[in-house]
Amino acid sequence: MYTTSEIIAEYGITENILKEYIDKEQIPLTNGEISKKHFQSVLNFIENTNNRIEKSLEGKERATFNYNFNKNKLNIYKDDAISFLEKLPSNSVDLIVTDPAYSGMNNKLQLGKGRIVGNYSEKGEKDGKWFGEFEDSEENYTKFLSECRRVLKKSTGHIYIMFDSYSLLSLGNIVRDYFDVKNIITWDKVNIGMGHYFRRRHEYIIFATNGNTRKIRNRKFPDVWRFKRVHGSKYPTQKPVEVFQAMIHASAEKDFTVCDPFLGSGSSAIAAIRNQCNFIGCDISEKSIEISTSRIENYVNTSIDILQEKSMAVDENIFWR
Image (tube, rainbow, N blue to C red; front, side, top):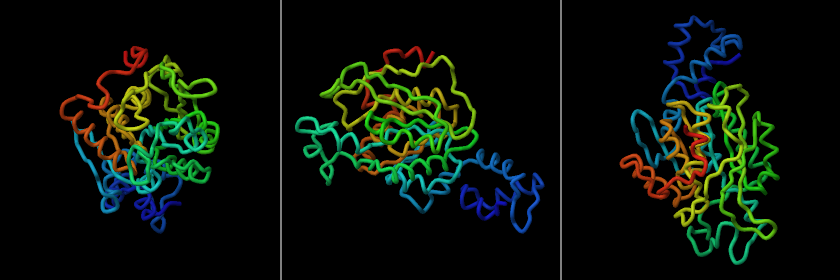
């Protein structure tokens, strides 16, 4: 049994809207509770109710950037990833695409004078790093995944999580405890990277669903994606827009809500705009908020991506034909 007050608190729907639906559908209440038999129809209604995310965040979090573009909404917040996800209502997001800043690779592999993505001490923020890394303990990652599962819609929820080789070995198996893992995608960066024992040229992406059987757009999409890395980027670990565009194009429909709790340079937001999706994201880094806000605002107004002037796709026709 589910009380109406519990539903309002967890799913971010107003009391008036829920009451109107219950009255309209003549759903029986027993001491203010809805039976399991009728709860699924209520959940289906809730998933299609607009503005639940915005209402849940009112008064809880400072919006850094808001924009309505061609009837689609884009909102960015400065917050820790887990704290941010905890503020979102349950079953409110259609798709999660994200690239966590895992600490494992950087802690284990120190290359030359700098670490895997460069010499942090010369670059930036108060702690000497460009960005706050996601401490990849099993406890921390378990909490992150549980919140992702809670906010993803049961009917449509797909999730893409990027991994380097170290984090895939240390954390990738935990994803199966929370989602139905469908495939591991290899992102081939085309140009060779760093490394002492076989130089790196790829990263991984775990693709999973939230217990549903919704298919991707096209069964012909391969599980190896050839997109060149971005060189000379203003933000460390900036990923090509095309990596996120492939995820969103494969799994989203127009007006779906896409979430990225590790916003970084904003590549996922640009990809969401191109796919006519709503977008909500956050990052704990001031540098991320500054760079991504400027990038997104410029793209919305001019259709010019100031951080990536050209496509990084090698086999572009595979995804967008």
